[in-house]
Length: 616
Image (cartoon, rainbow, N blue to C red; front, side, top):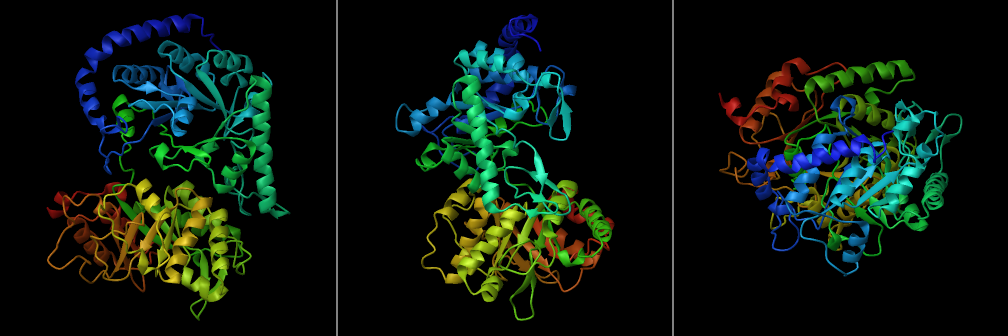
């Protein structure tokens, strides 16, 4: 590894001086534009809030590996020249780097944060933390929070480090001597990145590998670890990391950066029990001191730049624009279609379904989590839970494979009224949803038959974090009990999967122009052969309707797979009217009906046409 005092430091010093001279000339037009565009992220004083650019009290960026040659980087790496440009842009535009001390003072009512405050963090402890980032921190006097994975640093020299699916040499990571030098500078504070949770464990009988910190691992011959064993595993790991950093650096960490950005309420509780005070996530949302419970483990949301972004892309991301996708395409999957005594046959069917999803350009799949019974209740579940008989432990396999291989979001459907009819106890229903979210790596839940979710806020263009805040603080005391139970069950599931989306299946004839303020997405049931559910006299989503078209969509439900012509015609009509979200059921993904080749030009999110193109 290159020493900071060596040739690289001299080259870097020259590069910084040149950058300071050249950047104002080369980037002046861009920087003037970006300075205007980032006014909305300048801070709390004198800044109006909107859905497009919400005023955080500070911005956080997290870095990983840095290299001079972009070809040496993975998708989370940054090239040295772009990192220098970013540091220079911050300095030239009045941004001030802050530390955890600054955050704690401001949070407790002391000195407020600067108007343009940014926290810079670094995960994984690559050698480039010492060789590339630390020299910049010294030059710009920038505080850094660096999160270390203990087992990697404990690996002896000459022994390879298992880094995800790759094997890296030990020299690819910093040494403890370098960590102590950086800490002694007063600019670098070290956080925990766990001791040995930065890997995956077996998450189901079929062998899918899932993040260790949030997965109740499956042990062949034994079964799933108990909740007590899972909690004890987390506690031991976080305690070991804390003791290691105390021993090596003389300070126990006050922050935990969750591996892969994955955490849940149990992990937060274990960290808080051990004395951690900050939780560093990878949620791309604003961090707001005023929105936090002062007694809670404080969550710091972080932007992770990927694919070596340009300076303009970095600055745009720091505005925290609404991260909703521009288009969503949803189809359904029923686990019964994949259920077989033969794992080979199940995998064959799953492979065919994945091929169809990719060909369709779908963005999400809706999967039934339970088996209905003829009386309107639930007969069994597709995941292990004490609340219902197990049909087959298949749902985790489907979800993991579809997310990894088809690149789609997984949305689960578990009807709360049918669950209550079967179980008879609201608490058992809540526990059923908790078990579902613990076991299945899902992105969202479909909530249906809950009319009370039809809540309209004065402003409908709310970003996801404001929708969640409204949902969390909503008083359901006057709601019908079954509707209140639906929201309670969702929120319990969300503690296991932070960021879980609530997709509300509205009653028929609900207006497409009225998204629920408590739902991330509102789907309106419709028929392929009936007019769209728009208000009388309205033909289009309004051009100035905020994000209505990205929060409300149509759900076409038929008794059998639709014919290609009818589905294509309905999709084009919907898109011509400004619609961007739609789904249909059923779609036979295994037998490819209707054929993806025929309908993909109209339905694919990968070839999403503009209304102007459709009208031609």
